[in-house]
Length: 184
Image 1 (spheres, rainbow, N blue to C red):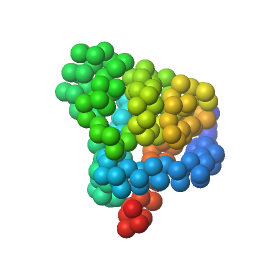
Image 2: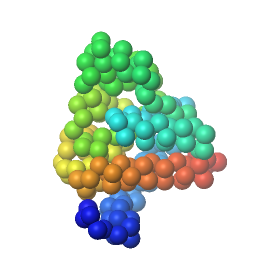
Image 3: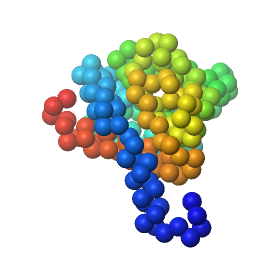
Image 4: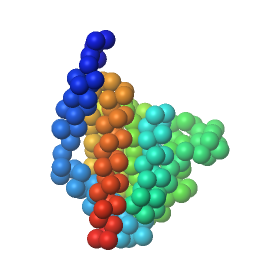
């Protein structure tokens, strides 16, 4: 981003990133979520830092707007307890083991796609056939981008562009699911 970049250029940059998101991947993500709900499952969403805030926002919107059971692991007591007992790189995996049921699914967010706690959780999900949607950025072949049933990758090296794109993708899913709630 240039110091003198106009807002028009800024928003066009984000639009360009979002234009590369596959409609098929969005439809597949909607179907995974719909199938989870049909099977009486819950949607879990997890991230670190800004991605954790996105996870909280989208989880609340799924529950309130789309009436889809959703939760995060963004409880300081949970994070510090599990990180202390199992190591920070394993706390998400251990939370999955403790909280998720067979019919649940998870959305994991890591801007870099290299956060060890998120990547380890994705590997665990893959090994246990837990339905998984990932969102990442920076490097195309980051570890997280290869582990989900659906992988949304944002081709940028700027955190804010990546995080805003992740937020827009997830809120889009919420809005589509809310509009189609009667069909779930």
